[in-house]
Length: 132
Image (cartoon, rainbow, N blue to C red; front, side, top):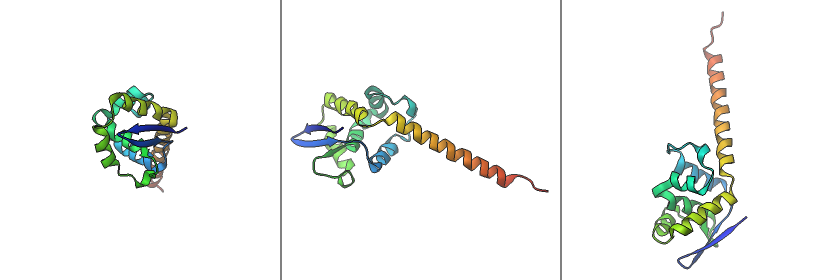
């Protein structure tokens, strides 16, 4: 499902995240203290990002005719900070949850990290065991 927005005379589109956008989003939230499992609605995402909500929006929307990999997120975030109304910001974030199953994706990443961590611990245990 795609969503379209008009901001300062430009048309922007939100589509399901591609891997590069997910990486950008993950890099934006990786140093937060709020558990990823609590990100399940627009209010929780806005609370998580606070002063960086314009950067989140710059990651998830793309100007019509531009590929996500070709946009400059920092420049777009600067533009959005003073062009996008709070109401429109909330709408973009609400639509984000219709476009993407973020809680599911973050849970899967957590599960994967847990499996890799367990495998590393198992390998370390094998390597440190004594042999007679």
